[in-house]
Length: 120
Image 1 (cartoon, rainbow, N blue to C red):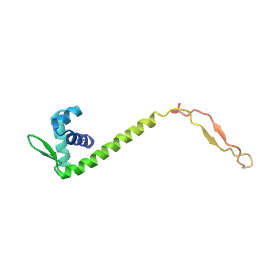
Image 2: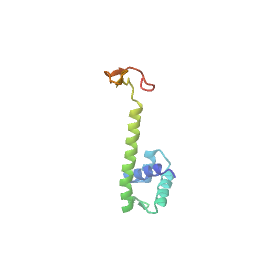
Image 3: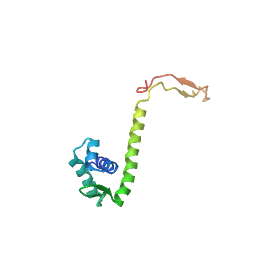
């Protein structure tokens, strides 16, 4: 089981209230969403959702897991966004360095104006 996919499926079921709507919004077949949530419950050894023929309600353990899952998924999304932004960084990098003279004395800093690979 892909735990992140299972967490996403569980969170979506809680947010939209049905497995059918969750499957539609995730672009997955309903049986797949059902299996993901069931495998998550099996791994955690607790029921996260009460299911009847008419509705799905969250259990107390499910509510606690939902809060944590939303936080974790949000942090993953933020991490991916930060990495994406960092990968898009472009430009010249100018670095000032001090030269050491022949007698070990520091001279006035100079700027290096070299292009560094990947920062062009």
